[in-house]
Image 1: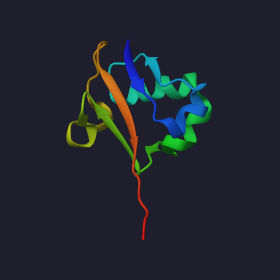
Image 2 (image 1 turned 180 degrees about the vertical axis):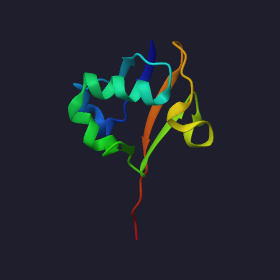
Image 3 (image 1 turned 135 degrees about the horizontal axis):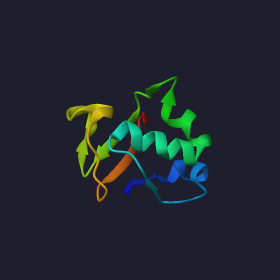
Length: 90
């Protein structure tokens, strides 16, 4: 099973887990598995059926937007990371 690393601000929605094992052969299927296990996380990642624009998903250090997006293949030993965009300051 692939693993998804959960950033600290989203951990309250995953039972404070820093990572979650997921099934699925693509990034989209892995995210579906994650939100099926932790439905309260879904609104923080998705707007309707689309990934929120400020949520970045990395597969083994590669931004999936530059790969095949949700259709990017995921192997059982792969690690996905959710990286929320951070903005602000003066």
